[in-house]
Length: 510
Ligand code: XMP
Image 1 (cartoon, protein in one colour):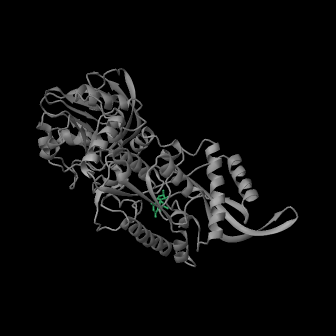
Image 2: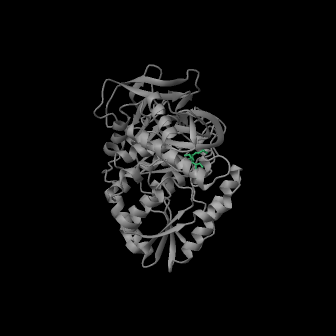
Image 3: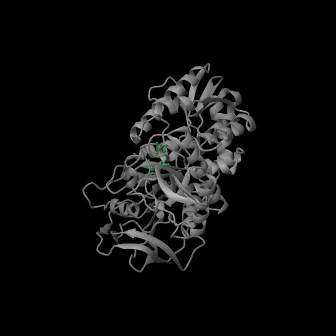
């Protein structure tokens, strides 16, 4: 394990992911974790993240100074470097010359950290403060940039390293080598964190934990619940009971797809509840977005509860919770991760439940979840799926939903996804979908005047759904989607493209 101490950097998760890419397990802990608690993790190394603070500011996050005495190698990045130097008695100057963007690092001494690198390398900087004077005790310079003399430093006696630049971002092209060098050459990690070994270990753990009890899992068809189902199924087979609720707001053929894959191909025990009528009856005439969401959430809990009540000896509730869902965010001004976690993405299950939780993916990042899914035989189409909101098409169908207009939306949406896939863009775009607008406009088709509904297209780029940019889809692709929708979907005679980013817009329309 390498522990990443988080000082509120927007890049802390990125550091942890880069370490994992070197096949070394990483764990993010908040900066105030005691040296003892860190030692209890038995880490081979510690990385201090960057952060938005200055070491001299009043509420500067400080780590337990005893971590520099554990005899474990430490690498400080940006603020982490400054804090290390400050704690050990050096000096930091407050930034007059802010340095932001690409810079060249001249490597003075390769040592273990820059093994395999020499001369000048491009690095990414983002700092105001910098190290002005090194502490006593034998720090040496490994590299300097034009602006920053102490850009990479090393104290051999205690195996401490510090770098002012960010090796975790793609703008430091050799960053992965540097992080790999720290993990392997310096910390002597072997690099055996693989998804094969993860699956094996989880299978053992799940069996030991569950014993002969039954497990319930709410399957949505999304990446996380699908992979969790496949993993738990591998461990305990028919003791896993998946509940799949059709709320009438799913995409075209989605229910069939899920039933075929999990119920038939994987031969899982799958309880399929078609609650379409029940949901649509409750939603009839309801136009207000928040009301719609609430009805769907409440209804889901009831349907799910009813279905799970039929399962005997059910002691566990499995969920596809992933690592970013459980990382404790560090409350520091200027850290976007410290803002309230996305208000949704949690199933809407009641808090007090009679079940114990089983969350086998809770240590994995999304790319690792996908890899586990692949290794368990889930098709690419499932593991690379775009996110789909819990309330389903209801938040993409403005106003009150009806079976008829939902079908229009489903047909249009299918064309969007098909064309985006054909253009090879589906897996690189965060979300692409159709939105149904309950207004009608005039058109002509052949000799006839039409008066039909409008479909809006949405395509956004994002890394976590918190912010998003609209995508500049090629005009010919937009044209193809538009004419196919108008020709093939009855009831639509106009297609428009949404060019709003988030903020100020949201990704979904409701
Ligand atoms: P918004 O529309 O808030 O969406 O910009 C951000 C991301 O969250 C997804 N989303 C939801 N996911 N339940 C979910 O599980 C919901 O109620 C919900 N609402 C939005 C949305 O698809 C986007 O990826």
